[in-house]
Length: 269
Image 1: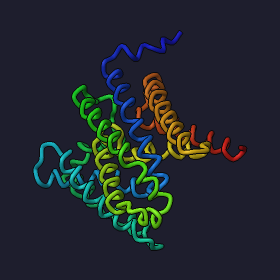
Image 2: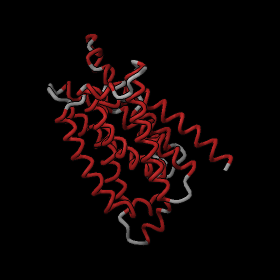
Image 3: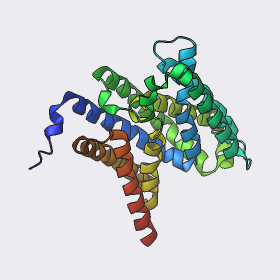
Image 4: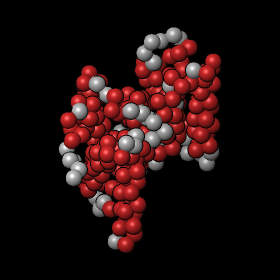
């Protein structure tokens, strides 16, 4: 008989659980606005830019490349946001070019001399490696995000519904867009070590997209996104422990199953 609580006997699993209880609500909140603002491509490009941020840190001889990742991501996010604000047919193409170029430069620098193996772990992440001190950092990020959400959500929501009307109501559209882009950049970069470059965008998008399939109002939208995100994170962590599969990909698999289930339910309804 399987003991379904045995995984809690290990401190690294308890730390991972606490981290998931912090990260998934953050991603659930951000994801709803990313989906509303049609920024899925933006956030994907932003996640991949982490490689270039690390490469910049390596070039400048930084021991801790987190600072270079954050600085580069903020600049990259503002640049992408400016491109995205231009309502042209080629916006996605331009973002793709910037993203591809950024990733290529990062890979070229990090792979010089055959050293890329030192950084390959960041592709899939390892939430089981998170420490108590790093959890403290996440709590600080979570508190800051909640404050931003309390004061900025109505503005962001108005902008996502109709930018022109939002401007006519004296809402600082460009400022709010840039602040949100910077917030997404900060959270993505500070979480990518544990989530992984290849799957972080999926964790941002899938719970919100699932919630949108079945929600009838904004409250349900946020509530379902939060529930799906937490459920995917916790179940993915437990299943990965018993199946000996990487935690990040397993969480994404659970979130994907939820998305397809809600999609089919939404179509029938």
